[in-house]
Length: 125
Image (tube, rainbow, N blue to C red; front, top):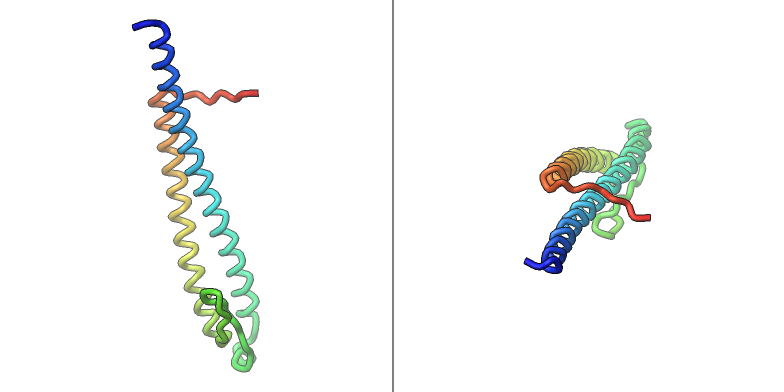
């Protein structure tokens, strides 16, 4: 095998490793972005729920409350919206937990891959 062929083979291996590393990074960035979105939704739901539950139950019956459902504003009672928010919060919290586990699993997978392939991060300046 000539020197040029060896060099070309090494370059192909390096490019394949770089592509795999980039794929891991893109996936982790996407997971972190989704996790951030879910976290902000949870905080927004908590703020609304706190505000609505602060209203004494006797005063809730006469109050109008609106909830956006599929881009349509729907008139609901305060108690109905509190129940919906509670359900949504549980669902979002569950999704947040799953997403965190997925991110941790993916990080470990990437670290194992880097160790197996002896990949080292080199920063270009």
